[in-house]
Image 1 (cartoon, one colour):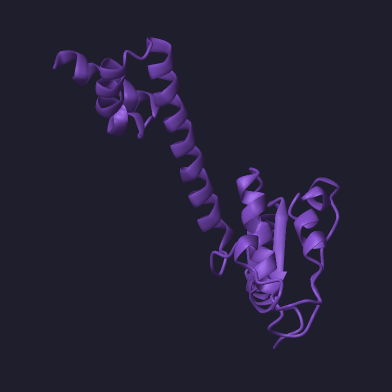
Image 2: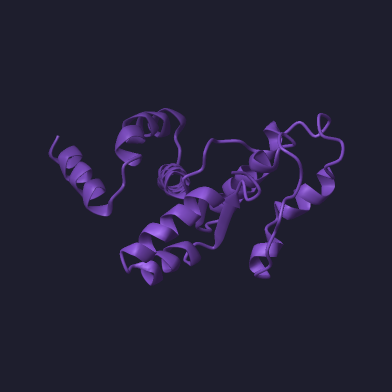
Length: 173
């Protein structure tokens, strides 16, 4: 019991949250299947790494202010045959971000521009990039307020800080 308390304290100090949840199950499994110490440790650490990555993605997704959670897999390319699926999948590699190029998705309402931009944003977050999503209306309104409050430079820095800035609904009122 003392060992268990010491381990739990060590996990807390290390900032590990997944291992305390799974250690007993994996310890029993390791004993039953005669798994080596290194394999046991590897299983624990891999689960902790995956849990930490999932928490990171959830946090970055929340900070991105995405309007919803849509992926490329959820996009119906057959519904919108004018969209080149291969080109979109190439954009999902995010080379345009690495090359510091802009991407503009143009088209009439309802063709999936927002869905695709959100899907690309989620890909960027998975690759460790920072993302911020806003509408043109909200951006202008925010900057007007910042200008009135003499904080325009600070607000502009907040908009240029992310690796990917998505400005949606540029042509709408």
